Amino acid sequence: MLNAEDHLEGLYRGVIMDHYRRPRNRGSLDGPGTVAEGKNPLCGDSVRFEMVVQDGLVEKIVFDGHGCAISISSASMLTELLSGKTVDEARALIGKVADFLKGDGSDVDEEELGDVAALEGVAKFPVRIKCALLPFVAVRDALDG
Ligand code: ZN
Image 1 (cartoon, helix red, strand yellow):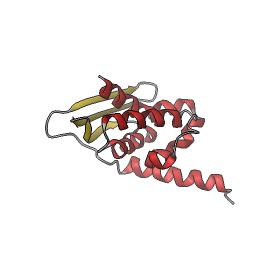
Image 2 (cartoon, helix red, strand yellow):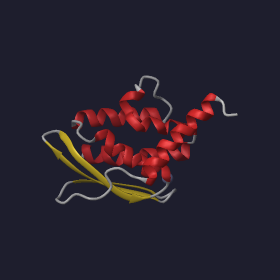
Image 3 (cartoon, helix red, strand yellow):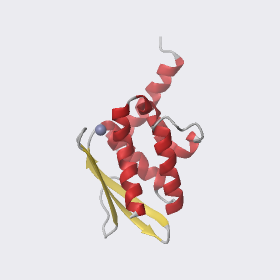
C-alpha cells in the first residue's frame, strides 16, 4: 500500500516525466531573440532558450537542449510559466521558484508556480536542485543582462 505522501510523489513524478517526454515549446525562433544558455557539467545538462522580449513583456520563449529528466522537464515547465509574463513578473516568479526548489518556499503559493510545483521533491536532493534551477538561473541572467 502506498501512503498518501508516496502517492503524491507518484503523481508529481508523472508530471515531471510528461514534460520530459513531451517537452513544451521546444524548438527555436524564426528570427533573432534574447538567448539564454545554461550548462551543468556535473550532470551533463545543457539548455538553450530563445526569447522574444518586447516592451517589458516575455512574448515568446522556446528552448532546446539535452540533459536529465529534471533539467529538461524544468526547462519545459519554465516556458509555460514565463510565457506572456512581464519581465518583472518573470523575475519575481524565478525568485519564488528558487526559494521553492531550495525548500524555502513556505511563503510561495504553489498555484502560482504551475507545473513547477511538481519539482518540490528535488529540494531533498541537493545535487538535483542544480538541475531544476539551471533553466531558471539561465533565463534570469539573460533577463538581467
Ligand atoms: Zn541534471
